[in-house]
Image (tube, rainbow, N blue to C red):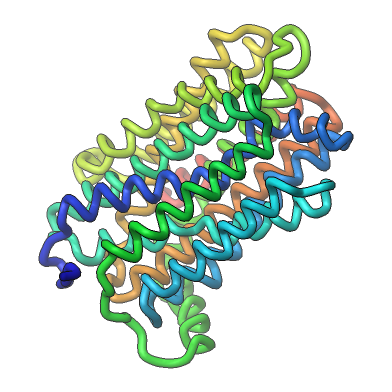
Length: 391
């Protein structure tokens, strides 16, 4: 017998933690490429800029998936949407594994990005049906699962890429998605749609929400720039570590991703203290931590310890900004939680795509100092928005 959910009545822990695990496994598809970019570049005989575009197309696809797929959860059954989504995702992962050239890889990476939006179906669900006092905590649990998936994806793909090959990593990912689809079909309850009308009217309502809620615009913009800064670092790290003085492989790049475990811990911790500390302070703290990270990346560019310290600060700062901006938005209009999450996350990954693009261009033109400058500039933009809004 399937679970029945009632708004604000409580969200079962068994379902919550299952969704957190699937969120992590699903979002990992978006990040497997980061430690593998230099390995793929060498295998296909391509340029660093073309390899960087693998990550760029995946991020752009994710942004479009957020914009056009997530709102469907207000109109149709989540289970049906997700089963179709998983089918396309598995096909794209297999296509990536057998891709003969960079063009096919760009296309399949784009489809992987579009279909890896699975966690964003879960976050509004937890926010809508959790008890009011547990909303931030439950959203934090799913975000922790999502972040753990990002961290694990880098470690696993780096190791698998070094030991077995990058193609094998995507075959393993396809198997994990098949298993996830089976679990979703068996466990996820059908929630009542929140919108009556056509898909066109649903999409038009997104613009109405953007115009109606200034806080939605503010939170989305500053979180987007912070995430762009975050991905600016990871989009070029594999190229940095492959050169002097490190000469490190994909496994080392993946292990560096483990340093971001601090970010995953921070997400579950921050959710409890948003009301007490305040959204403004969380955003200032997060931006300052990110700027400190970029300072370490610049002065300690040729040493492991400053890079590790910078990753810790970058991840913690990112989670302070994301959770404090995202979790509180669901209170604006609970019946439109999927659409509000769509707007926020679409802006978020547009910012991520911008950071990935700037990272590739900066690396090609100016090397690591250019990447540091681009990342710091994006964080400074996020901080400027926060300070201006306060005034």
